[in-house]
Amino acid sequence: MKILIKNIKELLQVREENIDKVSGAEMAVLPKIDNAFLILENNVIADFGTMSNCPDGNFDKIIDATGRAVLPTWVDSHTHIVYAGNRVQEFVDRINGLSYEEIANRGGGILNSAKKLNETSEEEIYNQSKARLKEVMTQGTGAVEIKSGYGLTVEGELKMLRVIRKLAENYPVKIKATFLGAHAFPTEYKEDHSAYIDLIINEMLPKIAAENLADYVDAFLETGYFSVEETERIMESGKQYGLTPKIHVNQFTAINGIEACVKHGALSVDHLEIVTDEDIEVLKGSVTMPVALPSCSYFISIPYTPARKMISAGLPLALATDFNPGTTPSGNMNFVVATACIKMKMTPEEAINAATINGAYAMGISDTHGSITRGKSASVIITKPLTSYYQLPYAFGSNLIEQVIVNGKLI
Ligand SMILES: N=CN[C@@H](CCC(=O)O)C(=O)O
Ligand SMILES: [Zn+2]
Image (spheres, rainbow, N blue to C red):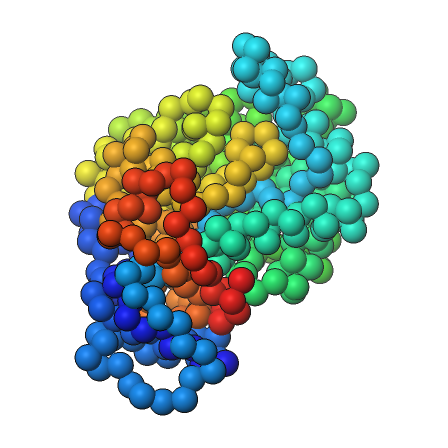
């Protein structure tokens, strides 16, 4: 299939030479071509340029994008979209005054989702999850990282990862799988943390590796969850099976977890609602991408990641949804980009870079996703008519997407 998109008002995030990420002041630059064409062929970006150089030729489909912007699809590098049921009752409990921590201490939270997941068949979990995946594709997401972590048993974790694999097989969206057995301690291991970590290391990881079910390893490094030392054990063991760490850290407290993640070569550190000056120092010059999750901050009323401070220090920053039943029941990257602008004071250019090329880095796919570059995946968003791309975060409650193409397929 050869698709020509012509008369594009603004073709955004154009990178003639591929880059893997943008950091600090570079984040404010979003290269674009006005009055552009874009050709997609055999699932990849074949060519682009100004309309004055638009080639004639035979196309299977021609899309006239007069008045519209075209940009690479969003890269959502942090989600938990495979889960069973929902946690609406906890949502109402929070409105009535309970905190996330209080709910978790009552056996709600992650353990509530784990109970539901272990009681639900693989087929039913797949059906619930595919509906969420289809929804986020229509919202412009072309690549998504999905974590396990609601099983917390050998079978439950394998079940989740098999569902993720099946989603990857059946949908054009690019998917990376992350093993998050260290999401919470099951009740029976509350007093014996090392026994649960032994289970992760000696039983879960070998089985996951044998079936090649995961690309990355994650842990919830947080006061009351996994300590720095416990997370280090998980990172070391994961790496032995070829799984690079991507770690939940600094959501509620800063306990020098970022330093440990950087030391272990983590691809990303995610959440970062609480960030110290020392955390910023250790991230400088590292391979580790900081990832902010502003929809989570919004939904459970916790601080937003201090983006300005981090970008001013020269750091890169990625944006992702954290789509999960507890803290972020939304996978809408458009809302994430808008919220980053409105609440974190990121400029539209910074937010779009964070949600495309830097997101791609945070899921290890910047060679194929995250920019309009020849040879990259034919995954683009075509907007509705707009005055400029500033309207995307400005009109935060409107759906400004007219058409999404994911790996050459019209969604
Ligand atoms: N914080 C840890 N994990 C998820 C929430 C999990 C849940 O509450 O179900 C998060 O990223 O916010
Ligand atoms: Zn998360």
